[in-house]
Length: 114
Image (cartoon, rainbow, N blue to C red):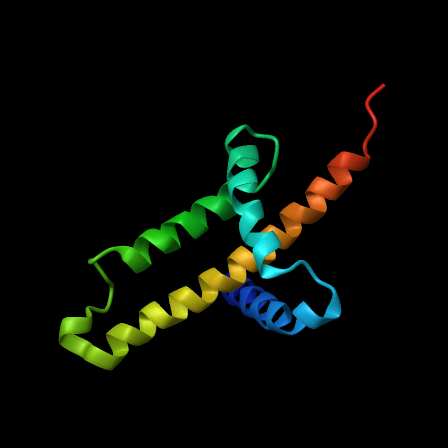
């Protein structure tokens, strides 16, 4: 059930991003440029995205790895479909997490330490 909700959230974020370019959301280039900052802040423990970033890294490794749960060599279309689903989920997850990170940066910049 929780996996289904996370998938739904990732796909919703992807659809939202595809529509939000004209609606004033963060642009794709802004999101992509936030990735290195997000990874750095996560590695330093400043940003709480550790598990989410790790899952996205694992999904990226799965997509680029020659080892698949459903090999393309044997099951042609089904083998490609699992990669397509993973890439779609990953795109939505990256969009959702970068939006969350950009909001976190805005909030962090507003905090005044006395």
